[in-house]
Image (cartoon, rainbow, N blue to C red; front, side):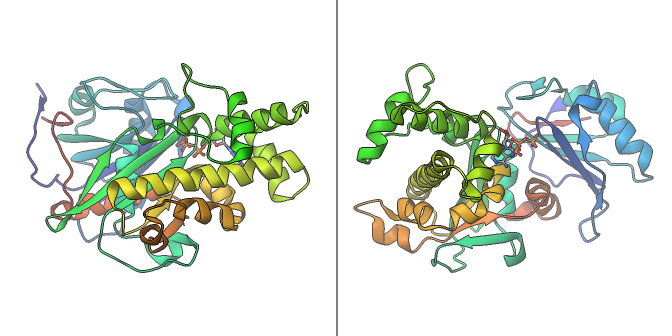
Length: 341
Ligand SMILES: Nc1ncnc2c1ncn2[C@@H]1O[C@H](COP(=O)(O)OP(=O)(O)OP(=O)(O)O)[C@@H](O)[C@H]1O
């Protein structure tokens, strides 16, 4: 019978790593600590009833490598033996995986923890800098990812290692600051009366913000898809769309600056998630960085902290790979989320 195991011993190679999103799951196998990893085509979660079926048909039947262990990054909290995924029907059952797939050792982590692991070592070609602050301080970092929701992960530098901190930072309050904000915020759709950051800083949040601006100005909204709003904003072909993405950049900068202060992230703040890459030209305009630094009495501190958009196409997998190869460099907790045969 597979058991929960809190030990920090390295996982045995070959290691299957997986980033399980709502729509897509991405997998790779690392044959050993020094070898190149073997990538597999993206798996659409809707194409398979269970994650075990997907691993069996898309990985095990396509490779002669037999993974002895697996590290999986999933959206949502990991609190039990059955881990339901946010935004898809799969349930990760590590005990069943061990019994049915011949894997001896399974570790499940949060998707933003994996993103955080990735930014410990992200080369220049896998990131785009926003603003002028630069530097490679070996110091705490933060990742924020606007996508289907708003994910946040900290990466604390302590005792010579990198410690990922999964949290629910996307649900902090976001408040009005300027006269224009005060016109718009009463029209932002709330969650139980609250404007959390995720009410604005994600795909549906873009639409929420766009509608709030329309309501503030007494204009009928014409867009209902976030991609339409961003494309009109980037093409400067719709005034309200332009303001939506300008304010989105401001609010993202505001929350990113808050996270930088909370974690004292002198090592940098990294924007991941599908939306950051898609609106990169807008994030390079002054609004994001101005809001990031607008943090009296700590503006001078924030001005020294670099900010980046992560452009690595498989950042979470890269993070899992760094950890799998060199677990001793990271303080990843295994409490309640590592199962062994
Ligand atoms: N061009 C775009 N501009 C703004 N938002 C977009 C654009 N294209 C897609 N979106 C929105 O981005 C969100 C999806 O984000 P993302 O691509 O980061 O997926 P995800 O949350 O990481 O999920 P998965 O891991 O399953 O791909 C959706 O809300 C979608 O409507």
